Length: 339
Image 1: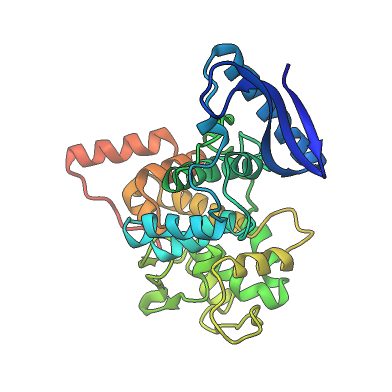
Image 2: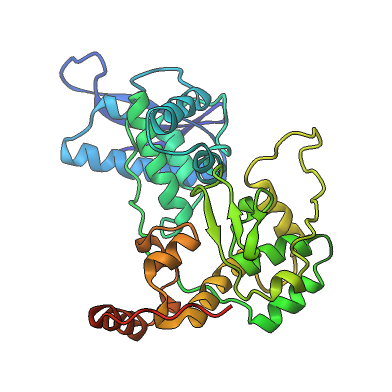
């Protein structure tokens, strides 16, 4: 019967398993999980024990699953290989890597070894129904393939579309921004242009109060219209306000620093800063109505049409799409947006 075993503060599985030397028969052996004996790691070990018992019962046990195929590779080296595959040779942009991927990967111990167990331990920090679990699951599955470490038998992600986010009203946004102190300009940019936090400080206001988002961002260069336009003057968005440096070195901060700074500035409020971007999307569709097509709305916010429809489906009423389709079929020109 298999069991969890502790030796010198480290966790192992103990069971009668096929001999590692290839000789016939079973032998009582310990399988190293490379985990310290902690409550969290005990839960991970219990899941690994269930996996071992299933393999033994079904006759599918293989030492290749439990032993690293490339011993000694660290998370730092493995992440470097993933970077090469996704960014250097692949289609992932530097900004997407830094903002979307490294936020998860930076939490892994750089000098720790990549093993099936350590991959399982990293995933066990999140609920399988969360977006974080889904993102990390597919990142680590790719990484495991690159370094020839067997991907553990862990639950597949069950995250689907997020529930519609509760957003503040326009009146609540005005009160929020105008009382935000050092963060007022940043929040005003998010509210008026629907920017992501990391896009704010590189954004430039140009003719007609349009806002240009720079190329070195998650979804690249785009031009955005203010909705509503009068907020540009109300929030004094032409008077750029500098954020106190977070790096302390005068260098360029990581893409997630602005988001963390804004989160701290807004602590205690009923909404997170990102709700301002969701509110912009709702305002965009309320103002544009059936004159606004999904492609235009998606491009304004730096999405694909599919991403936009999934994320902001609560704001896109079916009859608006039907009205736009009928107008196009009849050849009626769409009236310009107000502003």
